[in-house]
Image (cartoon, helix red, strand yellow):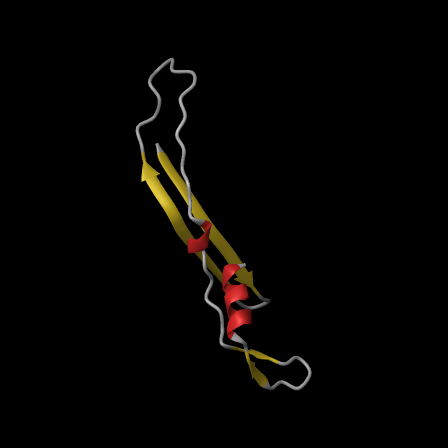
Length: 80
């Protein structure tokens, strides 16, 4: 049996799309024997390892100028 926990995202616009999948854990394991009723296998994932790439600046919607993001905002956005 193949077990996998993945983080997947799809970004799209009218003309372009981008799909990304990150496999957080993958494990191959032998399945249950015939007639084995209460077989189980557990997996765990450290959620603090899930991080996203964050831009250092953002565009102001009204003026179009670039504004630098604070380290606190970058940290919060990377952990979402």
